[in-house]
Image (cartoon, rainbow, N blue to C red; front, side, top):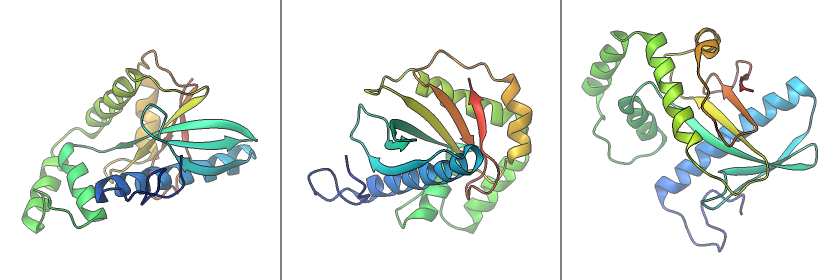
Length: 187
């Protein structure tokens, strides 16, 4: 385990894509932890990254170990590619203004509530199938789409069917910058 987003536990450099993934996970964890502390007045401290088989991030909640599995929610695969290309200078099939406008046009024609419900269900089902070496693990979903806001999530969450899963709790950071209040999805 390490708090370094650029190197593994042995100090070897990580690939650019793995470093970006770690930075996004760390940022999501920090936003969630800060919001959780403010809301519940409980200390959440010390972030470090884990190797596979363990959840993405580990920390302490009121001095007790807690693992966090981090997921980012996008409206579509195209949005995920655009977002990830804006975080680094890697090649993407969706570069350039014409691709961005085509994507935004596609998004505007979709039913936002149905897409949000489907996207959340896809993440929940995917994460529910995984097994983690962890005594206590929470799933943190960070909304990375400008298409949805806290209001949209409040409307959809009551209609979700939560599959059996390995998580003690499931939380949502409803906006990318972490300015809206976190939402508890499960239990």
